[in-house]
Amino acid sequence: MGLKRSVQQLLGGKRMGALTPGTMAPVILLKDSDGRSVSLAESLKNRPVLAVFFKVSCPTCQFTFPFLERLYEMYGGPTFAFLGVSQDGPGDTREFMREFGIKFPVLIDERGYPASNQYGLTHVPTLFLIAPDGKIKISAVGFSKADLQDIAAQAARATGTAAGPLFKPGEVVPDYKPG
Image (cartoon, rainbow, N blue to C red; front, side, top):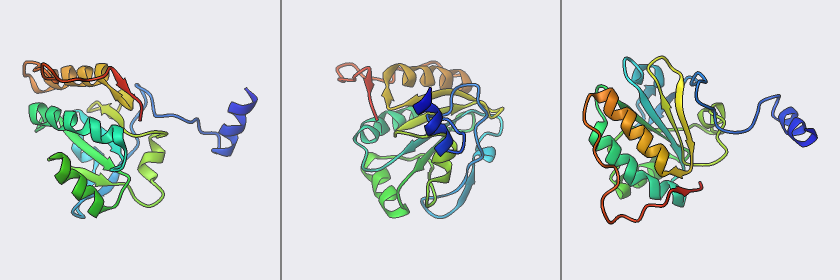
């Protein structure tokens, strides 16, 4: 208790660790990689949002993003939204998006990482599936095959489409890869 309490006191009474399911998602209002303002509230209108926090130099992020783009191609649109939140500058983020073929919107967390801090990030990638009412449904840190499959199933329900296979036959995909 002593160490945990000391850490919480240093953090102003806040606990460490990503926000958990059932928690209201904090407001996000950031610029995208092209400088346009984007808000989580606008993205949430009548649809769930998958918010993915990442760093371009993170090997687990690099491993995860092709699967996220596959999810986006299967389910992204008017009934299921995606928002990346980069902890890097616009230039590096655009290069990452080109390299990994990312087509969904990516926002730039500002200096000091205010959005990442509001969401309690300790590692990247961290994914949050946020319901239209603003509550977090899934909180996943690192690469988790089971969490991505759960997100895919929820995306299929939200879009009214049949769930397609997220992982292709023959792909070597670990169950978990820490961030």
